Amino acid sequence: MVIAVTRRGNKNFSQDCKYDADAISFQTDMLAMLFEAPGEPLREVDLPIPKPGRGQVLVKVAACAVCRTDLHVVDGDLSEPKLPLVPGHEIVGRVVEK
Image (cartoon, rainbow, N blue to C red; front, side):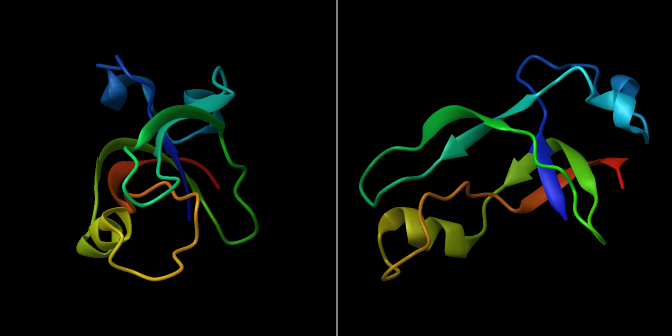
């Protein structure tokens, strides 16, 4: 699965996100919170919207949560995490591209 975060201020998610590529075709980037180093705050960044590969789908995210493992990484509890990291793989959204 490939995910894309909905842009801030999008209050009509369920209306403007249909099951097709047109739902995000106007966007070239996505809003993300980037974690770069333990002890540092997450940083708001714009990242390119990923293209789904074979067997993947693109999901426009309506809501996102972080799991305890993400919090361990942010807190510096895990040695040698893969950084930079966009935490939050627990999402609710709509498939917009196959």
